[in-house]
Length: 424
Image (tube, rainbow, N blue to C red; front, side):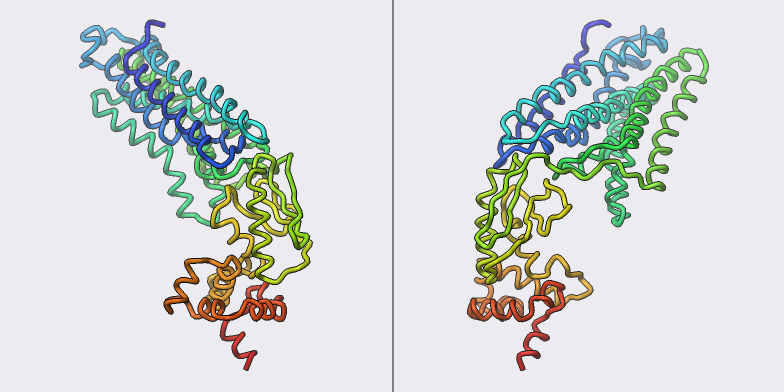
């Protein structure tokens, strides 16, 4: 292989810098979750994939087209084997840049975490996910030639990256299944907020199909150049059919069979503290820097609701759902106490079909966390009727109301009208 080309160097540097920035950005958070950081290379595919495709298309035009400004008339003598060499000259350094940054920086960043382990399966499958994009771009550049093929490559890569996201939006009830049908994308928008559990065999099968798509695109590139040099179209046709067949075949098959690709993630190590009421509050080991804030929020909410004794099991989502009463999201923010309070106000049992009950549970949740913004709205008579009623009462009155109607409230079967009618 001859020396590196300018387009491969520039593309590799951009990809290395982008992936590095995305991984190092994890250091700016309140804590580091190795499971989440391990998914960053997947997230980077959403940007690096189209960029690699664009750079590859440019390389194909410059090195293998009839009107190449770089190679001139000698390009007319380029056959399939020589096109493969040019493709390797671009693809190898780009893949190496993505790979080296991912497998080096992720463990370095995760080494600063309080707990958890690097998810090497997700890192290496992100590399598989990225693999076809530079080859796709080179194939487009070879097929169409001319600098405008760069835009075709970008457009094609973006479709490959984002089309499943649009499909997921159209078929909302199957949102947990649609992303699995495009292995390059699954981690980016279906699991980035939380680590993913142990993969199943079908997971590996889909990523195996994705890897074969990359090789099929490589043979398609060679086949197109062979056909242009007068060696026939058999290689181009068969490899093109194979690539499209694998892509759409895996999509349709996964969409119809609805396979389970990964088990629920459950952190192996955790820390627990007992709240004032006796509620057991637990977080994954990597989240333990947030534990004191969560316990404080539990104490405040339960105290305001008048709960003196409780045996609830309250845990973060990283500890799984089995045997847990309440879940909350970390890092700690406004949503964390809201999620804790929602389990006490029936909010998590409500649906939009019960609007009045939903309004009451929502207002009670805001009252339970003593939301400052809602208090200000009530003070200027700008709050909802439920909010105004709750925030204008003494705390002891709401606590007594909660004890009397606890079952109805927990089942989201209480509204302000029902409450005032019962009082009458």
